[in-house]
Image 1 (cartoon, rainbow, N blue to C red):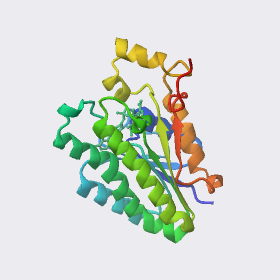
Image 2: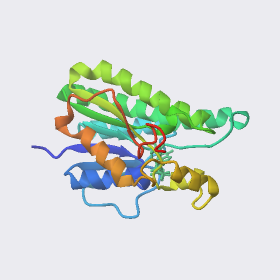
Image 3: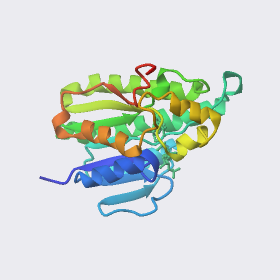
Length: 240
Ligand code: NAP
C-alpha cells in the first residue's frame, strides 16, 4: 500500500508541530504549509513556506501540491487570534482572521477535493476552538471557529457519499505560543483560567494530535460532521 500523505497547515510549532510528529510516527508522509520552517525538518516531512492569509499564494501552493500527488488527508490547523472587546474590534482584524481561519481551509479543500473524489476517499480535520461556544474578547476568533464548525458540517454532508469524512477537533486551553500570547504565564487571569479547567491543568499539544490521528484513521469512516472538544472538560461545565 502507498504511504499516505497528509497536508498539515501551521505544522512548524505548537499544536500543528505535535500533529506533524504524530502523523510521521503513524507512517504518513507529511507536507507542512506554514510561513516559517520548523526548527528541524523531520524525515518524511516536506516544508513549504506559504502565507495562508494570502488567498492567491494559498491557492497556487495547494494546486501545485495536488498536481504532484493525490493528498487524501488534510488538517487545517493554522490559525490566529486577536483578543479585543467589542468596541475595539476592527474590520481589518476581522478580515485578516477570516482569511486565515476560514478562507484558507476552504481554498485548500477546493484544491484537494478532486483527488479525494477520484480516490473515493478522504479525511479532513479542521482545528476549531472551545471559544466557539463563547468567551469574552473573542468576537472575531469565536466567530471564525464557529464558522469553521459550520463549514465542517456542510462539507461532511456534501461529501458523505464520496468516502470523505470531515470533522472538527476543538481544543480548550493548550500550552503553545498562541495560548501564551493571550494568556501570559503567571498572570492572575491565566491562573484563574487554569483553576477553572475541570481536569486542573492546560492541555498538551500531543493530546490534540492524538484526537486528530483518530479522525484521520481509515477505520474512522462512520464519524463525520462532528465537533469533538479536547478541553479537559471545560465545554461540559464546572467541576465544583
Ligand atoms: P501557534 O503556536 O501560534 O502556531 C500557529 C501555527 O500556524 C504556526 O505554525 C504558524 O506558523 C502558523 N501560521 C500562523 N499564521 C499563518 C499564516 N498566515 N500562514 C501560514 N501559517 C501560519 O498556535 P497553536 O496554539 O498551536 O494553535 C493551532 C490551532 O489550534 C489554531 O487554529 C488555534 O486557533 C487552535 N487552538 C489553539 C488553542 C490553544 O490554547 N493553543 C486553543 C483552541 C484552539 P508561522 O507563524 O511560521 O506561519
